[in-house]
Length: 75
Image 1 (cartoon, one colour):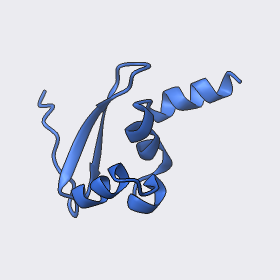
Image 2 (cartoon, rainbow, N blue to C red):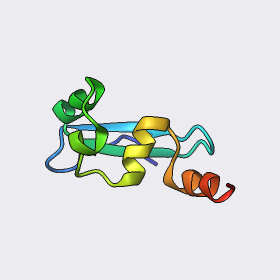
Image 3 (cartoon, rainbow, N blue to C red):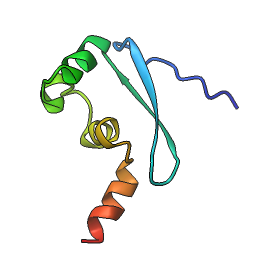
Image 4 (cartoon, helix red, strand yellow):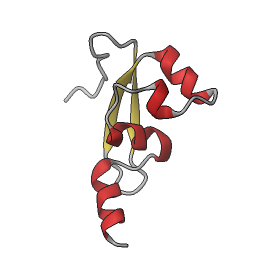
């Protein structure tokens, strides 16, 4: 099995992000300059509007959508 991340068309960077809750490896493709905008203070939803909420959460907290939903349901 090859685990090398392939950059999606239209994007120039793919991050491998491991969920800190379950250990699942996730891949998020994006435009690096947009990522840098976020890292420099732009709101993530403005800098990376093409990512879904789960991918944005994953970048911010290293928690995958499944674990986030489970965690949120426990409240």
